[in-house]
View 1 (cartoon, rainbow, N blue to C red):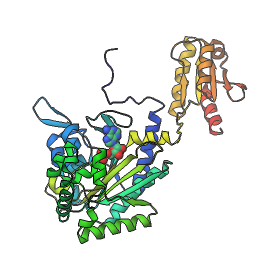
View 2: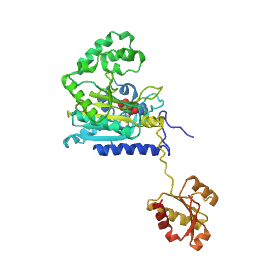
View 3: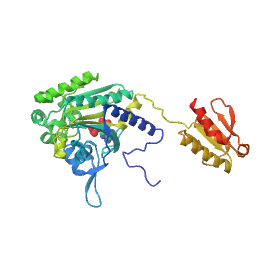
View 4: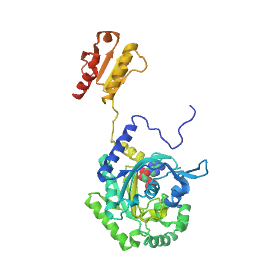
Length: 423
Ligand code: AMP
């Protein structure tokens, strides 16, 4: 073996990929009814895009980006998240000239140079939505409800929707000032990262995972205390819409998100698992300043991302079993060269009619083929040997009851199609 897969990456094999297709389909279905259209953007972007959007005090930019120079010395980065790319595409393709809002979704891989562990990978997949062009709080309600309904539809239990407001460009400075004053009293007790955050972005201290910092953060002044009237009323309306949608939620005044671009509503959906830390399967929020930061169009936006590996892991932990592997309906067993050719033709005809059919590819004995068909749990086996061809009477065995019938080769496809319709 020449080499293994890179650290922090996964191979998803048959048996697993069906589950991916299943959750992806659930995502596409819910987006259809909510009116979100798919967008596909490049997997790499100019590094500058992430520096200017995700923010230089975020963990992503500080330590997690897969950045490289291409042969023409361009600075490029494998996307660590997709809001920046979608916003860039929205601006570059002038989607803002269309009737607003623009409601988009994406499904695809993201890359972060993170310490790999269960549920955390260097290449992972996200499903996300982004809505641009409306600051209406009903959009916030809709976006959160979309994620919550998706999870409910997949059968997830013990979910908590956590929401907060992180303020806007008018009131956030007040909040930062309050936080700076508060955390300054504990400066020496904060971790080194948070000590530097104190100067650069005290809001991020609320997001620190260090126990000591978390403890101190519990007494921190809340955003809502510093919020301006607009932010307060926006937040109250978001809650009203969530109530109307029947989505229960908790206001978590310490909830800030790891990326710098969030304004107003921030939210997470966490799964409470017994014995282990809360697991965030979805995170998002408003980013009303981001479009102006990336382009020159001052339009509001909001979105979320769902970690798909984490979602599948959570479904597994909760015992939501998806056995989606499909078995072929028919196996065409053959013995001899002529029979093998006939088997190829029949298999192809069946497949053209949408019937999942399999055949032998290894010139195995009839016994081995029958064993294989049994393992595949097929409904019918067609047996073709020289005798059967000479008599033009192929043997069709019904695997459910072991009964057999003889069918002419020109009739075999119609015969099987008819039988399978009645199953
Ligand atoms: P974020 O983009 O950091 O807000 O994360 C959104 C979601 O993506 C999280 O709730 C996680 O479920 C998932 N996620 C983030 N980073 C990783 C990672 N390194 N590996 C797997 N999933 C991740």
